[in-house]
Length: 107
Length: 415
Image (tube, rainbow over all chains, first blue to last red; front, side, top):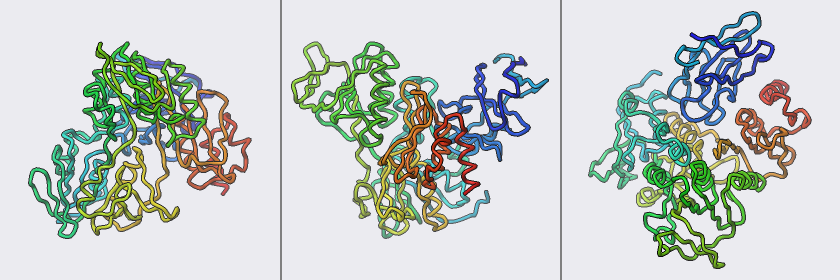
């Protein structure tokens, strides 16, 4: 694992998301008390999941281009047109700073 | 989902977006009978939007197939790909295939789509004139787009523009010829067409309007020459044209179904024959709220109407009206348009020329929306359109610093 610093918690208010330029790029979401990181590239086609529509009631995101929905907790594809899940990544929050744990071969 | 066992047989004719979505929705909704998917193309059903983009730009990683073959077998969906349907007996409910196979059905869904409208003047150029509708077309075109190749694109609609953008991105020299006086006359308002024109001109595409072609031939050196009415000659290595579609209504027509610019279906998705339905590009559906028939040639209509009609086939409930919506990707820009484009005025949210949302207003209410590199706001914009929201607080709604999603949620709570 390689730990990547993203930003401080205050820079990502709840209900918002941002794209992290890791390899692969990651979409980071803040929902209430929780942070979720999933692959930013939609599994269906070229679209940035961090630009997606966040539903903070059920922690899902809708792709901004073709409206496929994904579960942020598991990455699962919840409806067509996507059929494959998004990769998920562990998020660590320490002293008000947000970090991603990226697989070694990636990062 | 619980699968109710059933001895019924449902057949879907047409294995494109609508057909594939229909059969998967049938199973997902618990239909336990026999399902057959029949299509005349040999491939597994695939999405068409990538054909003018990913399949040309990044053929190695493009994956337009909707479901893999394992999906159809795991869902117990029988497939007949590469076999056209030849006749439907609408009284005895028998379907006949080109292979000679005859199958009795309880219900049948026609999702036969459309094909590219031919342009005989250009087709006379043989292998130097291509159209783009099928995977085969896209693969043929991909081979011909090379850096420096001179591509003449005929038609300034979505297909023409996306081909122009992909070809230019790949280093080809592109000239786009349009018969009318603007781009995307059918699907986009004037100001959006203008923005797209600027995008293409910035990228070095030459766009020429009011071009009425009268002759197409080869020069002595093998180049293609397109001659316009006013004497201008456009020279290139290859012509690609996108001038609209021809609906695949022949099977429906020959079988005695009512056809009028598409297969006519009622609000349940049913054609003029009981038990026979239609969806997708080929279907023209009665909209009770509007008091007229509507036909849409979009990916979202293929997807949503297929799901909606399948639900009607299973439950007898009427289809939900679907908000018109399409997107286009050109040079890395994503443009989405929803609802109506016939509006009194467009108001803009955002102050960057390359990233904004616009609302189309009629009588002060939101009836249409455009997002330019701002897909994130399309979902809340659609919510505003679906309730024809009054633009009562423009300074808030048009302030890009305000989160549109939150504004819409709050206004829904307040309402």
